Figure 1 (cartoon, rainbow, N blue to C red):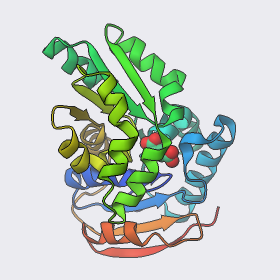
Figure 2: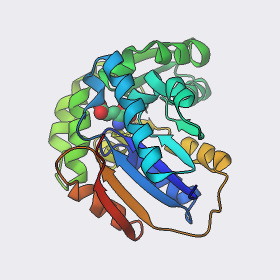
Figure 3: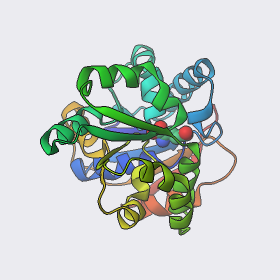
Length: 262
Ligand code: DGL
């Protein structure tokens, strides 16, 4: 088994997690895998999606033998994390909306209302509701499921200025809740828009799970962590993800890249 970490998402979103994992474990080979053939996950039927996630991850684990998997997708983790852990014989770290952290911030600032911005699937999952019941039952939560924002993050990574479109998609929702000061970015695509979000709405504290997932990954990782700082990139669709390869190349040497057939 190689001492590498496999980070998986439907599209570019997992790069927001990869950036944090990289900071926590700079000397570990990271392989980024995107299921571009089935993108976007947030509008797919649950049964089909769960099967797909398990079969793509199984194929990747058998091809690349990573020592750990980070399921860098809220939509996938809130649906199939336990199924995946049962199906694979390696540690799996998931990503779920930072409801607990948002609840803590709200209590500290005496403003018991926060936003949850995620995919339509994640905002309505029972897993998400259980997180709210456990960690933020005293808060009022304004939910917005927005798949168009996922597409916007894909465009933003490719270098497009998405500020006007971003304002068009969530401006009204934020204006309807003027005392909301905390918003959970419950989709890994959304922190990739952080520069624009902060510019447009500087009064909002945007909360994501990246740093917490990186800390958990560093706790779980059992390999040697100062050997190989290279990265790899794989995808399932027919189109080569040039923007993702460029993003990864800025973080370290890109060792290999190619399509994964599932
Ligand atoms: N990045 C994913 C998430 O965290 C899903 C985006 C999608 O494919 O809809 O939910």
